Length: 116
Image 1: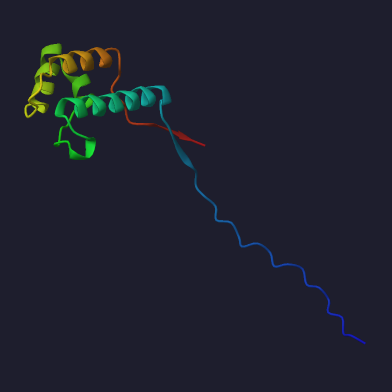
Image 2: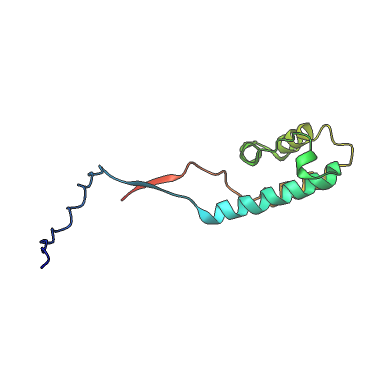
């Protein structure tokens, strides 16, 4: 003769906290993809120009948004030449190709916020 226990219902789930609202960020994926492809190309080209792997490369900063904000092609060329001042290989072809690739690109604006 066994003693039967009454099964108790499972405890209720913990109360859910109410969120005031959820904010998500919407990026322009097409522009981000273009930018990523361009940055990969830049790293590849710099590796060739400096004759070393990315990890061994000197600190070279090429800010695409900064180039896009420049008021003229000459200003862009000067900015790139300043960034590449330590490179002993000719950089003219790289600069021309880079300027050609950024033509038509837009500066990445801050992400748009969208309330849900």
